[in-house]
Image 1 (cartoon, rainbow, N blue to C red):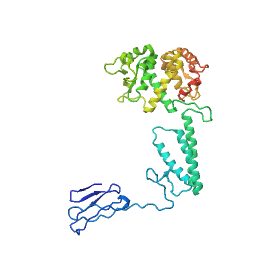
Image 2: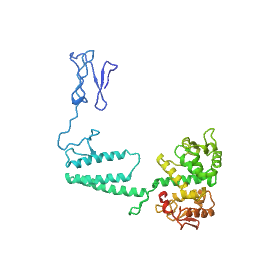
Image 3: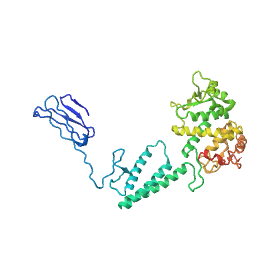
Image 4: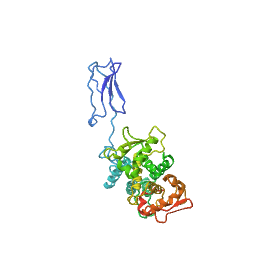
Length: 406
């Protein structure tokens, strides 16, 4: 609350009432009585007086209208924490609603829905539970009051619970008919983002070899949002083995990759997790026309997914090279929830051999050899084969959590 004088000798007083300002005008005809300004926000609703100006008396200001407190009987319940009326689904919860446990449940349910809306990430399983609670509470509310609109709201909540639960299962690639649940690393949306990244690498890799393409894929995922990302020597050696220094130097030589000033490829290979090397992928800088856009959570999830694929324990045990690891990434990204390989947007089964070979830095006739290596490593099921210009097969059961969920 503040007061001050205007340029015409008036006294301005900031009160409540939607930010309006009351003006006390000094009138020459004021009868010398003490002027009093009244405010509706005084403690206990009692008007608060503002001392008279030291100059001539001020005319009295009418008191602001006070807010009437609701009378007992059918009055809404105030939220204990916020002081606001308790509400759920845009409905006010009556304070005299009985039984008491129903009133408490409706109040807490409204708070739970509002808390869910503030979550940084959706949780469809939790949301389905909230809809279930709402359906039960509103059905009971309808029984108590006889209000048919509450019954309709309960029916809508029950439908929303079923739909949300199906969305959650579909998001995780789990069939709705009750089959075994598979915990998926990617959602369907993230799987679509992964395939866009893979297509970008296939078409935009600055070097043709499989080792360079693998490095381009992993560094692209590290730098996808800002054009820069951190890598360690352990990362680079884990991806490329003895070829790491050569590939890093060649990528820097094309201008696709930029190392920090005074940092060589050898220095990058020596960097440790506590002091990683920040590399720049010039194609992904915000000043350039960026090929894809997704948030930091999706970027981290995609990078972690690719790392799990190329670092698979059985692939490492079989000493799988860069081309075989790229084929593992491609098959994981282009598979249905049941693991069957398929091209995005196509109804048939299998993958086009020319697209597979182009991504992996191979000739089409070389794909069969690397497919056999994936079968031996337990990545693809034993019935995988290459014929008729297509790679057909399905992911092994142990690999299903990495499916791209076509």
